[in-house]
Image (tube, rainbow, N blue to C red; front, side, top):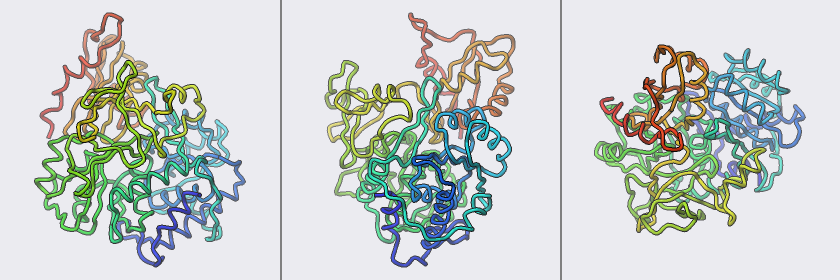
Length: 502
């Protein structure tokens, strides 16, 4: 079944009721149906080859969500990209995924279209967050009736790029079945109610905002209060109107600074995409009376575990990401390949209907990440307690999660090492009270480097969330007997770098 067909089945009977309230702009369920149909008809008119990718490098908007639904309806493959990506980053995605269509923000059309056309992209359209753009101009000429293209559960629906430690991003291939099974599981496990209202303040270029939040509301026929960008004061004012909120830890720490926080109608607060400090969990409970539900997932697997939603399913335990979701197999495995006993630390491996089919055009890498008996190696390290709750201890390959966004040190180091004044660099993540982790670079000098100038140069080359918040200069980097930089020593040395941040 085409995923859109399943989501459409969740729409309420009254299609003229409000589906999305976006800062006063009201979208009815009928508007979602008609708008996505018009876009799907326009995509069909382009006569793209089967399986073509539609890459989207645009700011968050309701029309962006309609475009996602249109791509599903048209039976094409959706490729969301962070709009903060710069030319050097976007070039890799275009070359690797070879999209047939690229949609970008109007302000970037000049450099994006040049880059895209040089690399064989046939169509480039614009889409802005003020309901304008060439994509909408073209789609407005189309019929508002469209029958979704038939798709099987195993057919590709989306590709999400997740960086690797070598600096080369990998495209995780997610099928219609992967996405639908996870949405249905979360709808049941998180006990979505008929009168639920979701406050949507997350980006829609990754799993959390696009699949977990949007799918949940659409599948349940729930109204959304929509924020194109997170504004703590504005979100706090609208909390009395909603029952469900999903955020990364950074959003919770910022909301705790707002007064008042009226959560009288709230049913469920959910946190993910980065570790939530126990201090934040307890602070939120003391302030609002609500316990934040933490869960765990990846681009390659969607959601895997969750703390309980219903009291009868058990307590929510701060510092853990809960138990495996129904249908998910999870095991902890030691370096020697044996299963770890309860409480023992090892690598997290999973399997289940939401686990991806592999990496785009990387069969060898795909084979390496799966065990002989079909379990996916997540690269995370953790332990299971006596009640089956998973605690994540760390991440292999030195992944940094800052403000909910993945940052891979090797990629940042590659750009940093090219700058004048830098001998070599080591990029690490250290605790930060707002972002969970902050990106920090330690460099050896070549001449007299200016850290502020290096940071400014990086901002011209890579997305802002990847840019180190601090660059520290050291005479040398610590190494082990094999010559490998000991990043753990650097993390310990600089762990208190932001301890005084408020």
